[in-house]
Structures are given as structure tokens and as C-alpha cells.
Image (cartoon, rainbow, N blue to C red):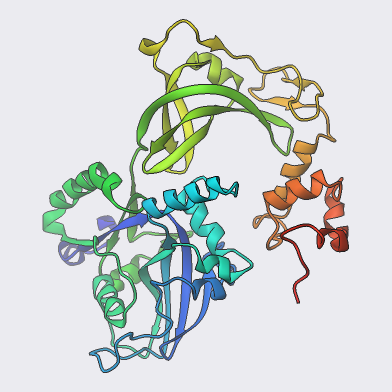
Length: 403
């Protein structure tokens, strides 16, 4: 960054260091102090309208400022970015309750936040223990002129918006302290009540931010500090095979449940047959597991010192676990494939991809619906998505026509 600045600008650099929250990024719109619209960030240009669900988040004020007669008045227009999240303890309690009732559980707090705010019924969102941090003003009209990010956050806090209390400030002369803080934060972040996957270091001056601009979608005035995932040891109980939309057969680890970074992990990826063989991973092994990117659990290696001799080497099965057709590994490839183009598992994953946000973006249609509609025989190919028997679907518990 300093290479892009004058000597005077570089000497006056100040930094704001914020946790990199692990939830669902949301954008909130206020006009004359009244909350009028809330959306997901989406692709940066288009997001989902989740206004009714955001209204149920207790930490989010529907009117600002929250204290009348205070020292600040509402701006005529305000657009802020924030992160909806769930505390780790609340997440575990919710999942335990869901499991007891035989209901769906969530893999991690990020998925929980996203799933809760994308509910079609806002009363379901209202029952979820969601919280919110606001960390950036995108549009601020009819308000005092603010020259720094830290001053903007202070103004937003005065309005009553939830601002994370662990945000720190450093100047360029204390850069070594900043570096030490990033190390200390990495060692202590597991003690935070909510999930974070790193820190974001921002230049405080809004003028310098505007001058430095962006590289593509990434700001030149900010950098993310990522930490390696927490590693734990647990037992590998079994290895199952999942079939993807292209027919690729991916081995997955069935683990003895273990907590990683406050989240209960029961399964992890094993990539492919070569990874298992080269790592000498066997069923019954004690294995080291990490949450890669704080989201996807991954088996790193076996703990050889804990072997008893009862561990069983694994081989890719000869047939697809779903349709029973042969699994074939083409010469020179690491992946193994189900050769049956009509395999129900391939169809489910193909439907999931087709309706996803990166493809046709069909709202309210995900893996759960794909599995159900394929199982019921409503979908035999992708074209059937547009000819679903809605009268029959409306008879299924949990589905009814919206008025």
C-alpha cells in the first residue's frame, strides 16, 4: 500500500482491525431513520430480499437513532453492511434440540445464519437466535461529514446499530503492536462466543480508501488475515461414498463426533482414493481433522502411534452405492465415476446445481427439494423442474400453495 502513497500520506497511516465474522453478509437500507429494506450481499450487485426475516433479528433496530433526543439525528439515507451470525452456544443448543425432535440440523453457524434468514416463513426466522454486527457504511446522506472509518463506526454506534466491541485501532508507528495483536487474536479467537475466521485490517482514512480504490472486487485499502483451522483427533468410524452431479464418487469420513472451533463435526472430506492411499488412512484409525477455511472439515492424516492393528484399509467400491452400476476410474485421473447417467444421486446433485444462485437462482429450491422430488418421481431430467405437479406437491406435509 505504501508504494501507492506519498511519504506524507504513509507517515499518517492509521489502521482499523476488525474480526472477520463468519456468518451471512447482509445489507441494510434506512430512509429518514426507518428500516425499509434488507438483502443478502449476493454477487455484489444482486442479492436476495430478506427484509421480513431481518425484521425479526432482535439486535437490528427498525428505527434509528434508538434514543430520541440524543446527540445524533437520523441521516436521510443510510446503507450499511453487516454480518448476521449465531453464538456458538446458541448454535449447539439449537442443533441438539433439532436432533432430539428428528429435525434437520446445520453443519456450521454460517449455514445456520444463511438458512435462517432465507426462510420463506419469517415466523421461523423469528424463532432463531440470530444476532448482528454492522461494520461498514456504504451510503451516508444527510449526516455529518466523516473522514475516517473509525469515526463512521462511532457514528453508527451512536445511532444504535450494533458495532463489535473488539475492533482495535493502530497507527503506523505501532505497526509491530498490530502484528503482535494479530498473533494474539489467533491464539484466543476460539474463546470468542461467535465464529470468526480471521481479521480484516483496513486503512482508517476514507479519503485514502477512495484514492487507493479496488483491484477487481477487492479493495486495495484492506487485507484479510486468515488463520489455520483448529486441529483435533477423533476416530474414523467408516468411509462412505457420495456421488456428485458429474458422477464423481467422493469418499467421505464418518467420524466419532468431535468439537472443532465450537462446532460438532461428524463427517469430513477425504478427497479421492489416492489421497486415502497416499495418507495411509484406514477405517478405525484415530485421525487428525481440521476445519479447512473454518467451514469444510478435512481429514489430514492418521495418528500412527494410536494404531492397534485392528484398522482396516479401504478400497473404492466396485459399484455405485446408490444405483448399483459400475464405478470406473479413467486412466490418468484421480476421480472415480458412476457410469450410469440415470443415477438418482447424479440427478439430485444436477438439480441442486441447476436451481442454485450461480445458475438459474430458483428461490426456495435446494438440495432438500431436489432429493424429495427425485424420490417421488416428479423429476427425471432437468426439464421436469418446469413441469412439477404442484397439486401433488401441495399434499406433501410442509408444502402448500402460497396465497
